[in-house]
Length: 155
Image 1 (cartoon, rainbow, N blue to C red):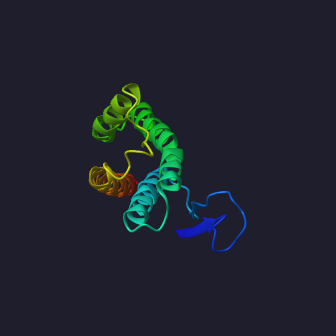
Image 2: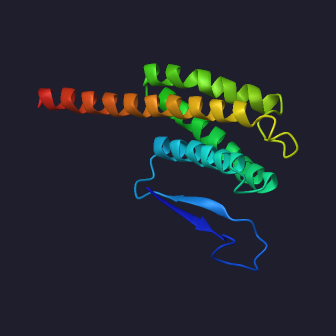
Image 3: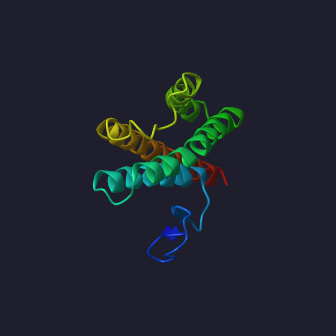
């Protein structure tokens, strides 16, 4: 996975557009994309904590990946449900419900004025989400390998 800055002030002095971090992956799997988005949010929060970027840029970068993260999670859960992977679908439901609850309560976006007050909590939340997604990734790989080995035994 390759990380690169787009419209960075250091590379393009004089441009007023805020930069954002682009994740370029040679293998566009949904699990890796979600892990990358969570990692992007954690990096933005760490940059904000150490005062490398201002709160407005940090919150706009984070808010730009929230809705795609929710849509990807919902699509993956639906995909597991449609393809008959009931265990993986059930493991995705709590995270999907949490995202849905945040979205319906309109608490899914980060407020620019409150970002420093919520910084510690947001970092813990994003780390928890990242570990949850990594566990789901390893379980998906495990089930894929197990299914491939079972299919191979019957041939």
